[in-house]
Image 1 (cartoon, rainbow, N blue to C red):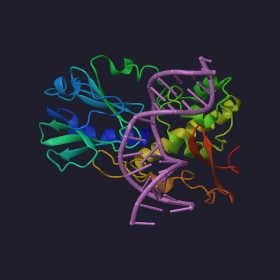
Image 2: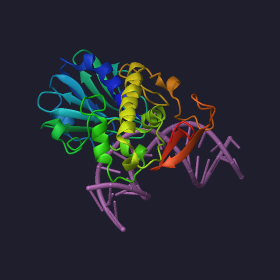
Image 3: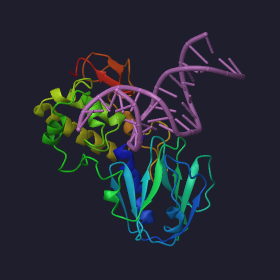
Length: 271
DNA sequence: AGTGCGGCCTGTCCGC
DNA sequence: TGCGGACAGGCCGCAC
């Protein structure tokens, strides 16, 4: 679920309530996420004061002095600030209680997400060390995509969803950006010209930025740091619109499986 | 090295 | 109304 805009919206929502706060207690009701929650999340994190809450790719990095908690929201996860002791629902797996009387609550029905701990530089963590550039940074360029794509026969949609190429572009925004750039999701990555990668870089930046402005896209579970849904769903051009009219031409939005993911596009606007 | 797939989970929806 | 099966925003780890 949560792609980059949702994770960034979450970061902005929870950071003010966390930074400068001492962690008084960590309550774990369900350890079994994608990986088991390590014991350090209780033994080391408790008593620490949060310094910063940053984001790298779709990971949130909570700097707690002695190390960093890493959070990933998987497909259905959310992190939000609640009053301590707020009624617990079925999938509320973790509460990190703060001296303020609030708590950071981790909720994840499908448990594809993760809560991890690292005492070292979090950017060197095995899960983060080999990731591609941030799409909203200067390091993300058409030249970067074009160079990496040389010789690649995988579809360009699969290519841009690969976190080692560029981070943060999940299924929704990959579909939207390719539509905006007029590129068929089925085209081999290695056959896309530098000029079209220019358009794609612009489209990815535009779509992600607009989605952040709208607080992300909520299809079902996603809520931001204050428990509110995101509103970018109303601006989706192709995602989940199979059979609907193309908003740019008189064509019809198609759906196909590409890399085992539902892929939406207009075969008249995208080639 | 690049590519394709299974698997992790729960919930929902659709067809019978 | 019940039930099986497909599918859902991510992404690791494996076999080829």
